[in-house]
Image (tube, rainbow, N blue to C red; front, side):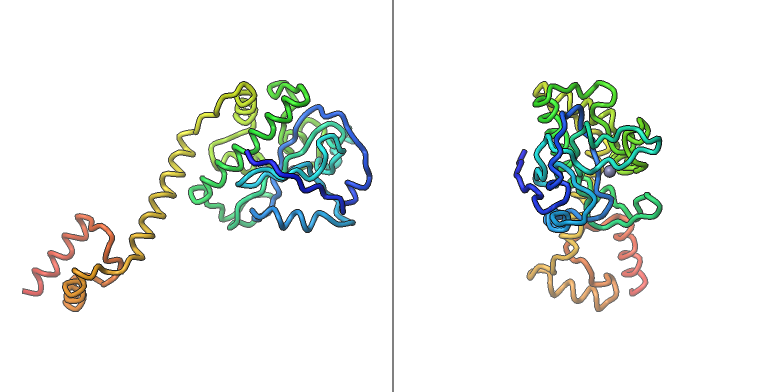
Length: 261
Ligand SMILES: [Zn+2]
């Protein structure tokens, strides 16, 4: 996994300079359809920004934005006035893909099939990064409260009321229990299993891409004359000459030929 460093030295959080002894890892997602980490590196690296995470997880790797033992600003203030996970947890912000919007904390227009490969990549990178941090700080990801998402942090009274990442992972058949299990497996040098749902989503997306590619192909030179004639005769509509013919389409063409006799 590709880990790079881009410390946000222009942020107020960096300048505060408080450190922590990491006791866990909190998983977030940015809550905005923006997969480009550069956008966040720019917008968060200036005074007046009230959020700062330790790293951004993007589809090609992880960018560390604070030293791991810095006190980040990611968990907010817990409802009950308890101690914020800012004092205990390292934060990973997973970037969401493009294309959706939000309504009351719910993703609208999110295409899980189209985003399957993207999700598989950021999920894997997050697993590997969390495993690296748990190993480094001697943390057991399966112990309660160690590896949690923001929503679980809220339930535990250590974070503000946010829905991430429990509002997103289930779109791809994943949840935090699986994430923790995958982190534990990764620490032992194993790979997580791809869920059937993820496999199906990736397969469907690949099929759709292939079909769209075929549909965009022009007619072959050797078939050009016949194709034009068939269109002129009204047997075909003249679109997508290189795609496969179904039996129902064949029946329609035969029926049209019959009627023209
Ligand atoms: Zn969050």
